[in-house]
Image (cartoon, rainbow, N blue to C red; front, side, top):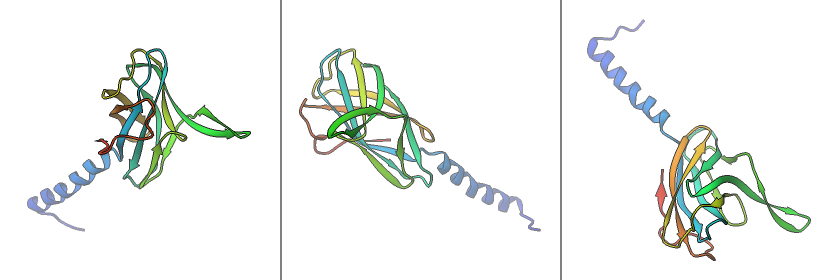
Length: 157
């Protein structure tokens, strides 16, 4: 049996608090979120890198943006030699790993744009993760034919 003095009990409690606070920190960070210019009423796509610093896997389960009627999680699949987009229920983000949302792979579909996506603008999007909860990001709007984010991609938590 261990008996702690008042000072010892306070020191022990102080050691526990940072561990609890760290456990509650979202383990997912978002790097270089971007999209391409697109017209009002059309469809846009969101791309970024999701990094999970946590010891447990996480899943991106949904997203929303005020500028779109709906936002879906999508991937590309090969179907008899043709690339087709398909919705997916979630995007896995491995423990201590990352997943890239990029052209030709996983991405967000911004369907029914209520305003055009103009190059140089930033579009707020809320990502919803199973463990990390809601993460706010801003997609940097690149040119309509962009293949990736502009140099010096933006970092968001």
